[in-house]
Structure formats: C-alpha cells, structure tokens
Length: 591
Image 1 (cartoon, rainbow, N blue to C red):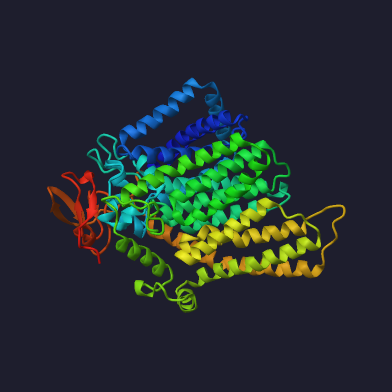
Image 2 (spheres, helix red, strand yellow):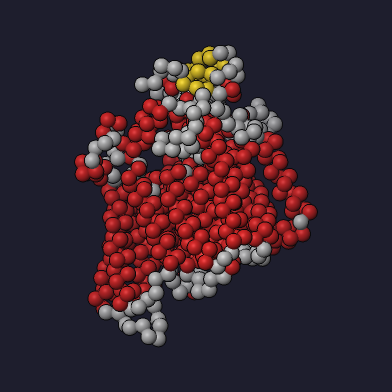
C-alpha cells in the first residue's frame, strides 16, 4: 500500500512535468499563451497521453524497460532544469498542490487517496488480466512488439496503448528487486492512479457547485465518481476497460465544463482541440470508445469558420501522430489494421492472423456480449437475442438501462420545453449528445457487456437532468415563462432516473464494504499484491520453454513467455530461429 502511494507520487510528478513541456511546445507552435494557467489536472492528463504515446513508439524498436524509462525521466529533468518557463509553471503547480495539501480539502483528498490505495494494493485480479493483460505487459517490457504475436494467442492482438504505459511503470527492471532483474517487483498501480486523478478532478469541480449557473458538468462529475467507486475493487488490475472509460469520463466532463462557460475565445478552441486529440488517443486505449471521436466535429468547424489554419493543421497532425503508433503496433502484432475487425484488410504480410481466426474471435466477443455464448448464433436477429440479453443482465444493470431510456425522454421534454421558452440550443451540447448516444448505440450493436459502455450509460441519465435544470433556470428578458405541467413532468422524470441509480449504487457499495471485510487482514500495507503466479504446464519449442496456463486460465506475468491456450500455440510456428523473430499460422491449420 505504501509502495502504491509512492509510485503514484512519482507518476504524478513525471507526467506533470511532461505535460507542461508538451503543452508549452504546442502553444508555441500555435502561437498562443498557455491557456491552462497552472491548472494541474490538464497538465497531468496531457503528460499521461504523451507518456503513453512515447512508450508505444519506443516499443516499436525495443522493450519498454530501464532504458525507456530513464530516457523519459532524463527528458523531464533536463527540460525542467533548462527551460525557465517549464520550471516556473511546474513550481507554480507544486505550490498549488502544497497549499491544497495543508488545508482541510487536502485532508479530504488524502483520506480517499489512502482509501483507493487500499483497494489498489490487494484483492482479486480482473479475469482478462490473468488471460492476457499481465503477459502482454511482460512481452512489451521484454521485446516491445513481435510480428504475429497474436497467432500464439489471439488476445495478444487486442492491442491497447494503455498496456504500453503499464509496462513503463512496472519498475520490473530495478536491480535486485524487479521481476525481470532477480526480484519479484512488478507494479500494477496505474489504474488506481487514474482513479485518484479522476476522483480529485471530480471533487475539485463539485466544490464550486453553488457558483455554477448550469450543472451538466457537475452531474457528469457525479457519474464519474459513481464509476470510480463501482470499479474500485478492480483497480489493482491493469485493465484496459477501467482506464479507457475513466479517460472517457474525463473528456465528457471537461467538454461540458467548457460548454457551460459564457465566453469562448482562442483558449477555448485550443482546449477543445486538445480534447479532440485526447478522444482519438482514447480510442487507442480501447477501440470500443472510438465513437467518442465524433466530438472532433465541433472544433473542426470552429477552426474552419475562424480561418485558423495553423491550429487546424497542428491538431490534425498531433491527433494523427498520437494514433499512428497504435495502428503500427496492430499491424505488427496481427497483420490487421484494427484487430479484430476484418472489414479493413490492407496488408498481406506473412504473420497475418488468418481471417477465419479473426472472424471467430470477433464473433465470440459479440455473442458473449449478447449472452448467447455460441458463435453459431451470431446472425440471430435482434428480436430474438434482445430478450435473451435482457434476461442475462443483473437487476441493477437493468435499472441503469432503464435510466438511459428515461434520459431520452428527458432530453425530448427538455427540448420541447426549451423551444417553448425560446432557449437557444448550443452546438457544443448537440455534438456532445450525438457522441454520447452514438457511443451507446455502437456499444449495444457490437458487444453489449455493461462494463464496456458503463461510462456512457452512467453519464447520459444524469446529464439529462442537468439539461432540464438548465432550461428550467433560463432567464432572459424576453423569454416566456414555463408551464407548470412541463416542470412537474421533468421533476417526475428526475425522480425516476435517480431511483434507477439506487439499486446500482447499493449493490456496489455492499461489494466495496465486503471487500474491506475480506481483505483488511491481507499483508499488503507496505508492498502491493504481486500478479497471480500459478503452476503452469510448459513445453519446449525450438529450444524455448513456453508456459501454458491450466484450466484456471491464469497466464502469469512471471511464467514467461507464456500463453493461455495451448491449442493456439500448436497451430502457430516461428518465423525464424528466435522467439522475437515472429510467429505465423501453420499452413492447413485453419478451422
């Protein structure tokens, strides 16, 4: 637990310094002043994205280990030492952290940081961490990227930028104690760190509730907090779902925060441009968040209308460069541009995962999401699989889905009420709602696991309440008053939506409290619980010992190199004499 907190402090300082550097470089290229004015969280999030892209790029050439980490650290230290502007901004941020830290507000944050650290230090790993997260991180540390690695286990083709960042911060290379240097240290604290950043961001914004004229962003922050405490028991895992959806929450909150500002200037356009880049970057963390990229449309139109070509091309280039390493890694790992989507087939490389494998893998994701559990039912019409899927949801999951349905009704009521009161509908809100509900539709039609779309499912109903409140509070000289019928209808819907959250929150509150009871005696108050390390079978393959997980499907970080399913390894072969030369499917082994 203590090690978890120390790692968080280190990650925060490093990402803060990198974020300040990257932000000031972009501001200089565009030709504007720093618009964040020592706002700590935006710098950290920029540094988070920049560090992740850096780790991805480095992985294309070598393993993400000691040299990669030290190079990033030296970059941060040297630029801070040599650049007066970077150093000055960093010192201002640190002074702000100090002033908050010695206040009652800081004590409040500290209590919850310790609380989240408790969950991040112990517990049970996410199922997918045992299947492939841990092993994928080790492959990135050791080799960076290997041609056709997805052939030996298809899950290793589920490329996520987040796993490259996790590899950067395992510290497994530290002499004597690191797992790859003679010890057993291999930290997995980044998910919990993102949760801490999200918690502080949300609470810091909510503390000024009474000063906000609108509350859409505040209600989105509440949805963010609900998500954090819903998934806190899994923060020990380097799970791509949790990290990507917390970043989605951040983007949604910041977008609404800027929507609520009364004045829009060049700084607003810059921040919107950065959010657009961030939305594209988030798609590289989890492809199921790809539809969030639709928010790009608003700043794109603003830049074109304002003839701000320099900013337009800068953000376009930065967005492209932030996503490019992800695409390159995809092609190297699987031979496909967007595995496991076979609709874009551009490459004919030796290590390409056969189309038959890809189609089965993609079908399994879809049918499991629909609670069908049989790939032969992939083409079942929605009228048949929808009732099966609905029955497969928990009661509290169904309540959240009811809330999403009610949110659509609430938005319609708010729209009609706004038209009656002659309230102007802002384009930023329209783009936000379009991106939000298209994401929900994309989630529902592809792989409707509740956890895959939870950021959007939690946000939509609460923000709909904020939209109604905004219309209700609208005050203009010539604006007509609203009928009490609309108000009563809106209040009833608000009550119904709030009820939909009660069962969900109650269920996960009980889970969180039960977790404390079960794990309070676990001996992880200094260190963090290591990755699971179970007994595994092994086989010799061209002089390499390759481990194969048992029926428990735990592909341990420490048993390396390893796969979770022996059948996938058996249908693959090496492309050279060395493991890192690459893997390809055996001819004639396709199903």
